Amino acid sequence: MGDWKLSTWTDAAQLAASVNPRDVPDDARGIAPSVWFTQLRETGKAAYAVNFLAHAMPRYECVVWAVRALIEMGLNRADPAIVAALRWIDNPSDKLRRAAAELGDTLDDESPQALLCKAIFLSGGSISEEDLPAIQPPPDVCAKLAAAAVLTAAFTGKTPTEAIATSLRLGEAVLAGA
Image (cartoon, rainbow, N blue to C red; front, top):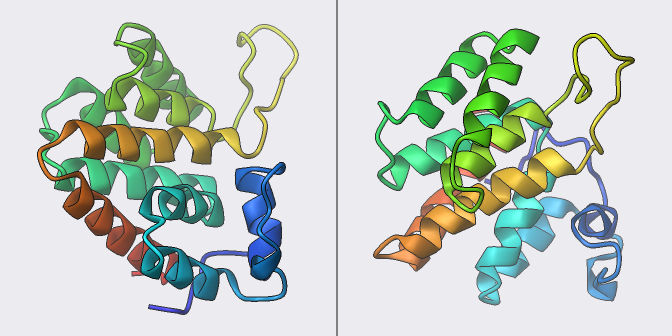
């Protein structure tokens, strides 16, 4: 799946700079992100590929991908964080975005569920209190948290390599518009 219809990125190095501005590979310059992504997978850099993929997506689609990956890894659809995420996906309103944040605040900060809830909250819309002037989140934080949720779930599972590979396939499908 080399055609990433939903990504606006055209240069892998520019995208890599959004993942980590202090470590932009020279050989990523001037090539398509999907080509660089394939190279990452083929050279065994799957965890980095998860982060790269997350940053390639629009924020809404990034959350959709993370939820699909977490469910595929075995998180129960009845888990309160998954329910909150699915509700927000169905209706990405500010009220449901803030409800996901409130739920995330009650969870273990290092759990995939808490990271997912934080990704939803930081996906867009003001992060200040509702009665205060709007403050937008940094544009890369949603992707960082969604990728962290996916990787945390994968590495706490029984088969992290398979879980990461599945999440990468799901992400490519999302970027392809499937």
